[in-house]
Amino acid sequence: MTLAILGHSFEDEIAAAKALNCSVAKIKDCIARNCIHLYGYARGLRPHRSIPITIRGQNYASAEMACEVLGVSPNTISAAKARGTLDNVGIGQGKHGRHMPRMKPVPFEWDGTLYPSIRDASRETGIPLSRFKAVRKMDFAC
Image 1 (cartoon, helix red, strand yellow):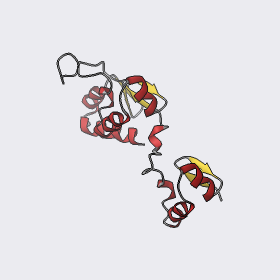
Image 2: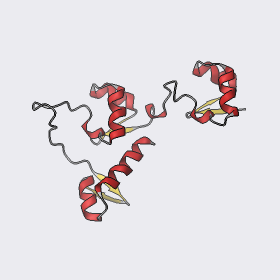
Image 3: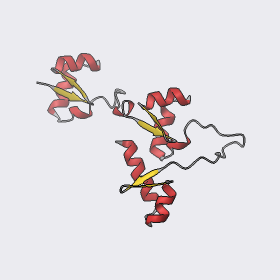
Image 4: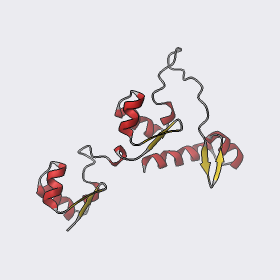
């Protein structure tokens, strides 16, 4: 029986338990409750660590790599992703305290059309900016 847990395949319960550093009973319990695909979230094996992430138009192989390059903690990336403010990560507070410097607009694609920024997409389509931000936030969560 092959098990798939957070994108990793294991031959059986014993191999999964060894790899995830838990008991075989815990793996069997998750299988019985039909939640084996979620096992690992509480153990820090979150799938976003291997998912590519884009910050200010720069693509990173994972959130961990972005943390190293930008000099921020993983919690900073996670919190910014939840707030929908990933483009502000790693730029510092600026010389005026909490005021953020102006950034170049990040291109935004909607329905096959590329717009210079998310704000321009909102203006041209008539769709509220909050809806675009929610869609962007959902894309980062996946």
